[in-house]
Image 1 (cartoon, helix red, strand yellow):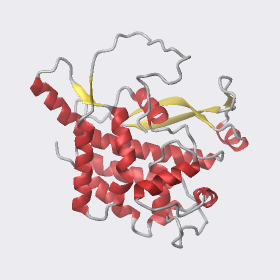
Image 2 (image 1 turned 180 degrees about the vertical axis):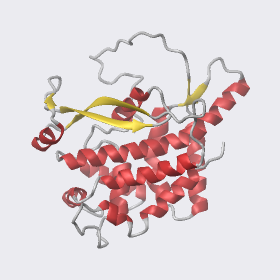
Image 3 (image 1 turned 120 degrees about the vertical axis):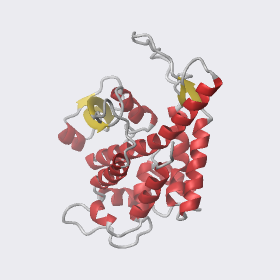
Length: 294
């Protein structure tokens, strides 16, 4: 399978450079992101995409480390202030451009010649602030002492029948529910950013799964194999900043190819699971087979 995601990542890098992107990042009627600040727009966007579900300070430290900077260029307060000026729709714009390239290339799988879009809904925990209650109509969660709220979120994903499992990925592997702050704007920003990050990592996994599947068939394995999604996401989150900011197309392509190869080193079998609910031990907070990859 051709690694067409390499072309899409290069286009994504090029989109971060032009000043025109600031127009999508501004709120209506505002004139923000016109000056080159300590943390420019592209860094704010990538910091959101590379989010690991940590505190704001640790997210900034982690981002600076992965970028190769000696220290943070901005304070937590300055970062959150700039985030409040950021229009969440900039992520939907970038996601649209990324998916437009994917679908226009004829790579999407079809069923009897048709594309099958699917929609589903799921509950997600967000901070139980007054603003979130007003915006999302939150209800109090009785299972936690922190008063975390539950809000109904929905979205449209592609190419999967088991769409509900992708909400599990967004919430538990990509850490959407670990929202940056209490304001509703952070909820929108984090959700849209992580949907884009999800699509990017799955684009690479699609090629990696094809490669590992073929290798498994050649070896005569009992079950088909695919890449471990949890580890693939961890590898992607750890390297995406340097990959996207690489200004040389050839070097960026080499970095992406190496990332795919490393994903292919971690595979799991695709077994048919019995159609019964799996019981979990709720008392075991850190299940041995459900540890996070980052």
